[in-house]
Length: 175
Image (tube, rainbow, N blue to C red; front, side, top):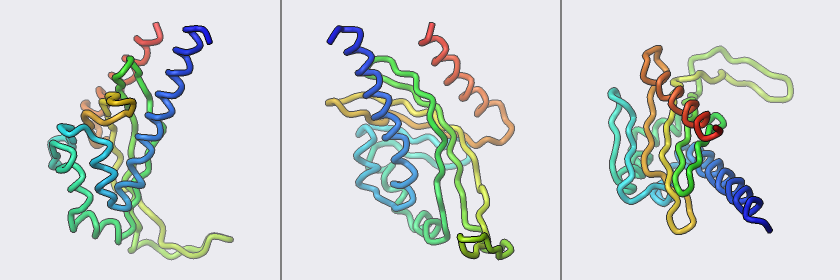
């Protein structure tokens, strides 16, 4: 294979691996698989949930988030993390990923409705929508999370700026 084809294939493989890494977050959070969460963060990784929620530093501390009794209560109450397709800015062994995440919760107080062929439900509601900025690094051939910052989409400038940074970095890499 030529060097150009080898490089293009590496980019494709890296992006697929990154898609898989980002896509793994909702199932790992919604099943409280802390061992998995710890395995995808760098040992000194950072989880920054903005100014209104607590964060953590270090893979073990980050993984402990999903073992909290409050998180288990949310899971038992019908919690679902729903991720949007990530925007990836790949730069060799580093990548910046920008994405949306919806926190969806069972609406226990909603009106019961039947949907043909799908049963009866009180429905769900979107509890929160956040913008994520993931900084990833390749170590020993595997992509890991160096840091993750998430900001609620609340009408303020910060999440909008985070999204704009993601778009502008991808635009720069294409030029």
